[in-house]
Image (tube, rainbow, N blue to C red; front, side, top):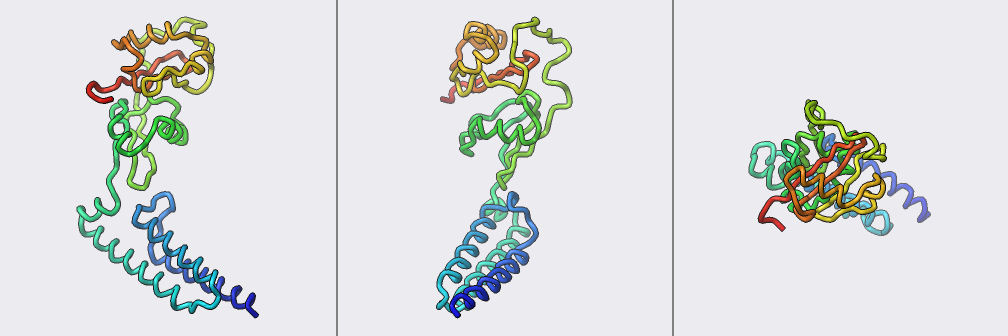
Length: 231
């Protein structure tokens, strides 16, 4: 008999939670704001409590869920009418790359490291930071990428000598936050001396002054310099 009760309660809670989420609106999970995500998690937790305790009246679980949905609908109405409240509860987009330059301070503020950025760029089928005009971290946590209209290497820039880069594939990070990636240097068959010469062509003398540096299969070296006055 107890198993039958649990079975019936599970079906009822399923449809209640399904109805609650439909009332909250049609938004993809990856596009939920922090506020929406908190409400969804709380509804799921309440549903678990109702299912775990077969002696708990259903109303004790449904009432809090209805209350949460009413709060969510009210806040959705308020944020629809007020830009200030919308920014407060949903946040605002953050520009991580602007005109091809990494914004180190904004990345630090968002606790967004280079590995996270490179992974998100690859998901957008962008393999080289040099090909990005803008990269915007939306309030939902999704990265929007606008590619440059022109190739990362200008027509006037000479091609590298044949055989200087033996690696063929995705762009390789050579310097990350001032630290030389020696394993990747070995992968392309180059040395720190070669790397120092390459960043020297960009007017940089010290590895520590480089926030990010990579090389693609064509031998094009992308360098993003650290802003002075920032550690």
